[in-house]
Length: 398
Image 1 (tube, rainbow, N blue to C red):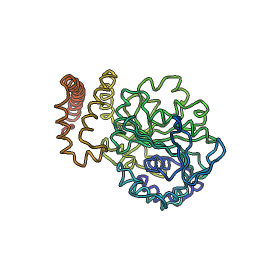
Image 2: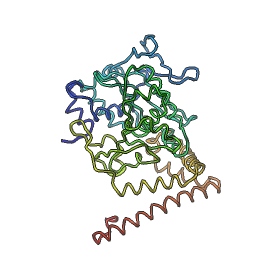
Image 3: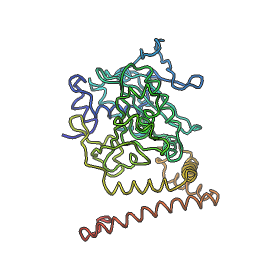
C-alpha cells in the first residue's frame, strides 16, 4: 500500500535501521526535518572572525579534539526541550508538526543524532541558509540542507539563482560540507529538498577534493538547477554517477535552469506544480513509487520558461527580480504567509507601487512579461490543436 513519509513512519517506525535498512523514505524524512528550527538545540557552526563554518559551542558542549564530532543530541532530546511556537517555520508548518509527532512516536528515528547545525538569514545579504548533520545508527551520516522557508528573502535568493553565481547560500553550502568533511572520518551522504537540493549539489561540486572523494551520493529532491558557469566540466565530472535527482511528474522547480545528469521521477498525490510538496510523494516499502517520466506537457512548459530565462540578459533578469521583490517589500510583508494572509490589500499596494515605478523600468518589465506570455500562448495553442487533432475534442479547455 502506498502512502507518504508520515504513513511510512507509521508502518516502519518501530523497526531499527538494522531490521529495515536505510532507504529513500528515510532520506526524505531527514531532508524535511532540516526545515525545523534547531537553533539553541543542536551544536552548531557559527561565524567567527569572518570564517563561517567553524564549529560553535552549544550549551553543554565540551571542547573536543580537532577532527571529530564529540557532541550530538538525539531527536528525542530535542523533542523534550523544543518550544513548539519557535520550532516550526510557517512554511509546511501543519505537515511538519504531523511529521514531528510521527518521529517522536518512532523508535527508528527517536535515537537519530544531530550535530553541526547551521542557520543564517540576512536581508542585507539576500540569503537564507540552513543545514544539519544526522547520524542514524549503523548508517552513513547525512548532511541535509534546508529548502526555502517562509521568508521573502529566501524566495528572493531563489530568484537570484537566475542571474547570480554564486548566491550566498551556495557559498555557505561549500563551507559547510568542507567543515563536515574535516570532522567526519568516513563517507557520508548529502541531500536536500527544493533549494536544499540545489545547495546539496553545489556544495558537493565545489567542496575541496578531500571532501568530494568521501561523498558517497548527493540527492537533489526537486531542487532547481544552475547557471552554466556553476557547472563547469571539470567540476561536473568529479561527482559523475553520484548525483541523484528525483522530481515529481509535474516538476517545475526541479526542472529550472541547467542541471547535472539524469533524473528519476516519483509519483505524487498532488495536482500540477503542487507536487513540489514532498509530503505528496508516494512511497511503498520505503522506496519512491516511480513514474516513467515528467509529464510531456509540463516538459514543454518548463522548456519555455527556461528559454525565456536564458533569452534575457543577466542584467534583464536582475532588473525583473529586483523590481518584483522591491514592489512586494513595499507592502511591509517579510514572509510569504504574511503577504498571502492579507493578499487583497497587499495586491492593491503592489499595483500602486508598479504605477510609481519609473517609466523606463515599467517599459522593460512589460516587455519581459510580454515575451513570457507570448511563449506560453504559443505552446498552449499548439497543445490545443494537437488535442483536437487526436480525438476531435479540445482537451485543453475541458
